[in-house]
Image 1 (cartoon, rainbow over the protein chains, first blue to last red):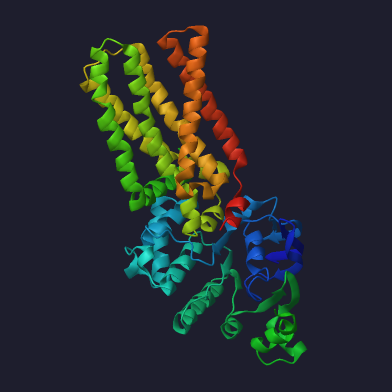
Image 2 (spheres, chains in turn green, blue; image 1 turned 90 degrees about the vertical axis):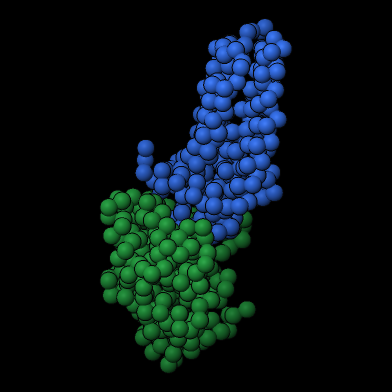
Length: 242
Length: 229
């Protein structure tokens, strides 16, 4: 089990954002965390990425406790925030170089790793372009490249296809599949249900800070007699949707 | 020095000095007081009153601290504005490394200006160089830069929005003024000479810089920065 979340709660100034969230993610699978805006998806991801501390409950990433072993988890994970997380005044190469520095990748190793990543993501030609001048889709690709600079075992992708045109969204999902083929465990939040269905093995549906359903897509679809993930989503979230 | 600290410091310098909103105030902060105060130094020295020289020197020493404040003011606010704060905080970097890395860019900027000032004053101006002047330029100046840096970085890491509108820039100036007033009061109380006064100022600044650093690294709170997005 790569990620294990058990009865997790999170409150901000007395307001509950997560209320007893539990789910599991197996090694090497792509897990979609689905739910409407404000459901608690980003809060959960932020806790798993050690950016927030839970109010109660327990969560482990690769066997490490998110509260006690934050530094170990940070070494193992890659994280793509919703807004790319790129420095606008640095070039594509500069952004990756800085990220590599934060992960203590040596100068000699760094050049090779950045070149490898830029080629993998089809960004080599854009290496000297300022991040601020890139299109949204390109920024997202650079963001994912940045998130994988340390060759993480686990990737957290917060809305990796948000705001992208269908072509670019498909390209990003293809990249996610390629990362899965490399053996990475991926937890992603998304709104694009049809696309998520193509790449994900398991899902959790969350609304108002509570998990409504979790498990393998095929099992949930069979259980709810739904043909698509979209049908599952509205069958589960629909009546609770605000 | 720790590589991560250097990486953060380098990135901070690159992003700061590419920002037009920082360059213009920086040039003004150096230029205006420099041209107003430097010509007064030989005049004050020729007048025979060294107290006037010390006073102008202390005013000149505020220039590097203003530079430090300008560079440090947006250290965390920019990370929040650019939405890069999560990418920084999710990396395996300790609170101390982030704090010192951010401070490094401010200290370097401040010390470069401070060193230029010291060279101009010591090498080119016709003023008598005595021990208090040397202590002022070579010890108090760098300590002021460090104290101002730790104050601004600790304030803006805890309250990033204080950098908006430049309010945070007054924190180091306020802190330094308080130190000067305290030392002035102690000097009058104990009737001590300029050398001892300057040693006292240096010691107080060193202690305050150290205490500010300790408190600030303990205060550093990832969650507070993430939730301020």
